[in-house]
Length: 193
Image (tube, rainbow, N blue to C red; front, side):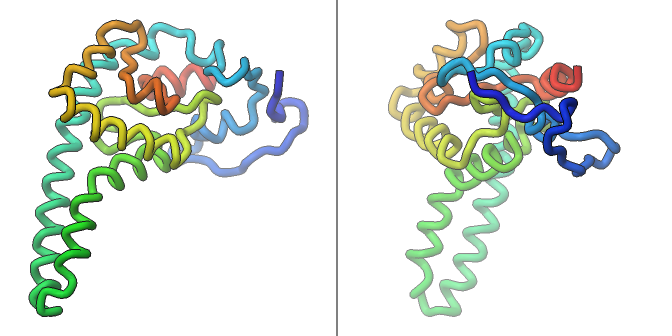
């Protein structure tokens, strides 16, 4: 078993406090002594059923919120591409349309890896976690998003039925990318003890 430094034992500590004067869950995880069980999720961290209460429904509503945000971003992107396409006499149009096509991948991947979830997920009290309890890496987030964007249209959404068949509400792209979505408030409370 591998362990991280324990701040209670005099290990390294981070001084970054949140706006409310408390440490974030990631800062607390960075200093905890966590036993890793192979390549799987840390068992004691993700064994609470409250972490998964209503996750499937919340993910649906979170995605609807993210679709609205992406729609606004796409509209702004088209306006930007149109203006700069005119100013460049059409030379920037292919690059602009490629950037707009990659917008959903960038949106979901960057938010998931850097903030633990998209704005829709934050509104619905959800966050994505990696096997060690931290935020997913950028590679995990890109794999997760790319598999979602490819598998859902290809199967007409039937691939999402997997979320109804397991007790943690994980979809196929969650399994393949090694990401687990939990309730933010319950996860933070579990970390803080």
